[in-house]
Image 1: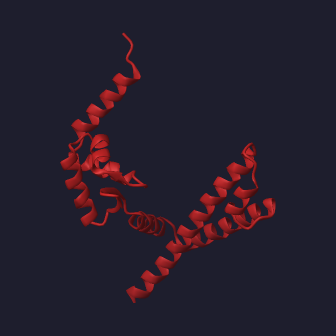
Image 2 (image 1 turned 90 degrees about the vertical axis):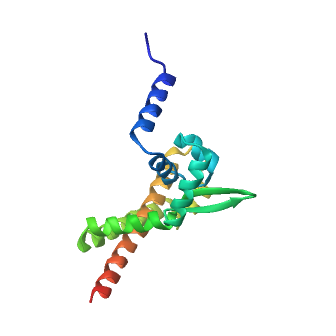
Image 3 (image 1 turned 180 degrees about the vertical axis):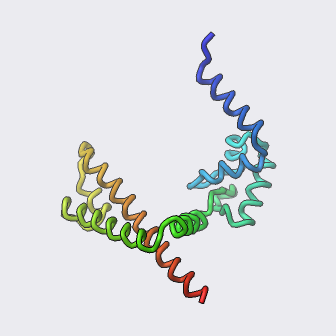
Length: 170
């Protein structure tokens, strides 16, 4: 007898439910939510009741992990993007030395200049306006350019955070 994908998915859900608490499941779902979801949507994905999802979402909002938006009368919950960004900045600052940060920033700036020179534009947004739908290499470069620009911003913030932390430590 061969298992179907539905059987496998059901088993994975059952294992997840057995190995985690309702709060942990709601936390995981909110952690993955960028655009906001209602308590009912979160409850469905987290395998909990809607009141349980709402209660845990409110706790996550109160601790600063999540934030809310309104869609009419519906409250939408999503992860707090500022908190995620600060976590990335702190993590990078802790993992990389000042020299590594400076070298990484230099390399990313050089990579961005290569994209600017290659496409004769000053931003990925400008490149997007010029690309045809079938220019796969250009779209791949566009994605890489945006990622590099985002990583550069985080590295610069990590460096600034490190410098500010040293000033406050004095």
